Image (cartoon, helix red, strand yellow):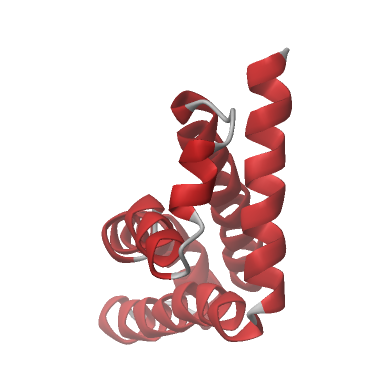
Length: 127
């Protein structure tokens, strides 16, 4: 139970911080949508499909590409780096927060972002 509360607290703090910095939240939304548009229009042109069908076929590849991109550049590594730059990482590790809860919280926060990106991409692809 202790780990669960700590994990939720860390995830909530990360998501709140992303909400305050609207610029990064906007980029989390713009990137998969722009990749979907690019993939969809290229697929529609090459396969002579309608735009709707091309978007539906391009959505899974777009989500895989966005997941790979953000796992390397915008995932847990960038979160830890920003925590270190803001000098909050030292305070977190001095606190009674366990390291497991901290990294599970990062994972949970980025999973929420990934689910949001998936919903956004599939909403655009299906409309």
